[in-house]
Amino acid sequence: MAGFLTTHVLDTARGCPAEGLKIDLYRIEGDERIHLRSLTTNDDGRTDEQILPAGEFATGTYELVFHAGGYLRATGQAGADPLFLDEVPLRFGMSEADSHYHVPLLLSPYGYSTYRGS
Image (cartoon, rainbow, N blue to C red; front, side):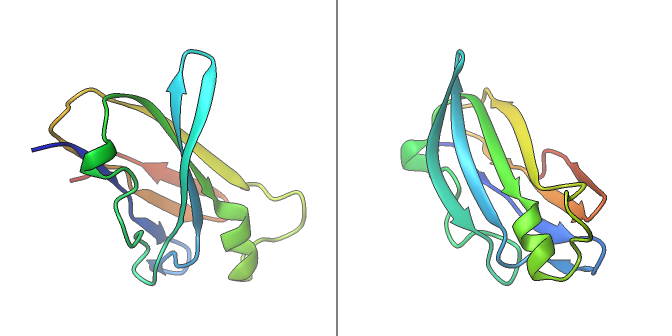
């Protein structure tokens, strides 16, 4: 079984999935940051496809950039500019070639948390 990467974004301030949040995926190679794809969360706060599908999965260092500012503006939670949270970058490593990596984001206008989910 080949590995793959997924996410789930929850809006903890409103108590619901974060629909319409743009996410960019990058692979980190030394000092280089290579953009692999952009996706947007659906009505369940997930992407319609795996962020990094099994056919493209490789171990290494990656970065997910969650465009929280656009989402917070669209949902009326942004507050004054500059926003406290705009882009939320999460850099992490995937070392197991046959594992499902799940990187959730719990988001509010003034804080976030993440963890390795299942």
